[in-house]
Length: 344
Ligand code: F6P
Image (cartoon, rainbow, N blue to C red; front, side):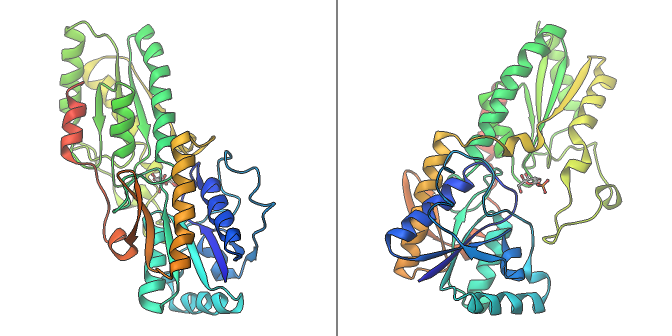
């Protein structure tokens, strides 16, 4: 058996741990492993090379991905899909393990459903929004970074009696904002799931000040919905091959900080955590999750259980249909947001 491995979408710490796990388990079964470079782009371009044991040695703790990543979507064009199918056969692949989030796994689903390509998935995204798995690789490391940042920002906010707005990633789901905010003691959180308003946050901050709290930390998910703030298509610029706009262009955190200062008179600052959330060494949780999911993906290949992804449910790794996993987005339950509100 010759198995290709690819990592698509935004990188996260833990990808290398997953690649290592896939490869090492593959070697146990005597499979030949292939590195499909730069996500689905590697299949489009035929950028596929042997993945050797030495290539996956010493990478468990290293962020990024030795395979490279991209947001290439072969389904943007039928001719490109055809090239991918040809390359799959030309390079003698018997299966592909696709490690990615909704977009990368969405492509895997379509190759499997529409072209019977033998694929299995491994869910990774710091957004943690893939259906069917409790956790995606990269999320734990990202929220650990957010929590660390909030701890540090508390002391400077307190020293200067300021409101500090912290913008975090999270396109459609507020997992990073809510879990990071809970762990880091945020005084207010804006997320994509629950529409917030500048009026509410300002009233809340004023009431905190009246009660003696002369500083506040406000976490804003980059994809948050805020009643008084709207962006035109033009302001957001070009879309990527999956139809996503670049949310960092919204500058939502900066707008919120400016509005808080204007409406309340409290001195405010904004910190955008950005790609720091996707850097560094994976946490213990992400290393172990990536290792378990990667090993399980090869078990799925061995059993010929294609069209599934390895998923964590409770403490068990189970098969989960890719079609269902990519049928929508796993957003945060309102109950969890309400729990976080207890501490506002
Ligand atoms: O898709 C994951 C994600 O981290 C989003 O939260 C964020 O909007 C996006 O990637 C940013 O991606 P890029 O690397 O293209 O700036």
